[in-house]
Image 1 (cartoon, one colour):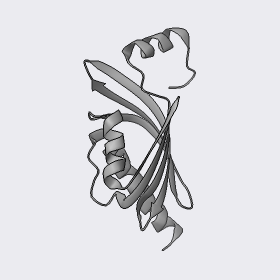
Image 2 (spheres, helix red, strand yellow):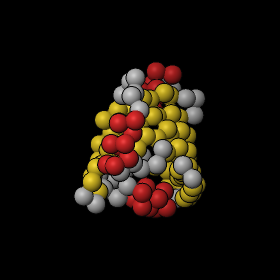
Image 3 (cartoon, one colour):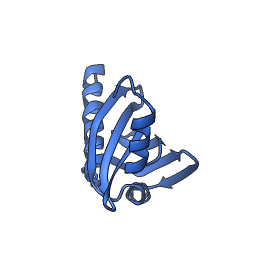
Image 4 (cartoon, one colour):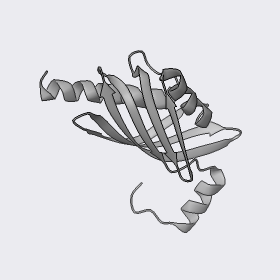
Length: 138
């Protein structure tokens, strides 16, 4: 397989991963059955092994569909690194988070995820941040 073909396949897999983040439903052929997920939050760390466990870990933190209005993808020798901004509506308010995710592939599927999350910001936290911190770039 050429580098271009590998990059294209990795980029397609990353696009399907973003689809999963937005819908909460993993497309077929996204995760390896034995996928391992290591999730780091501001003051906590969680892990899950196996597809059902990894999906449950995500559903517990983000149970509703949302959007990924911005992302940046870098392919690596073993998979990809993706930076995402997520937004969703839950419990009557709008939520926001930013994540940096390293995905290592196994048999052409996501076999390991390392997720670093800012934590989920409710509407008040977003308002406070906007009032106190002028961002130079979105």
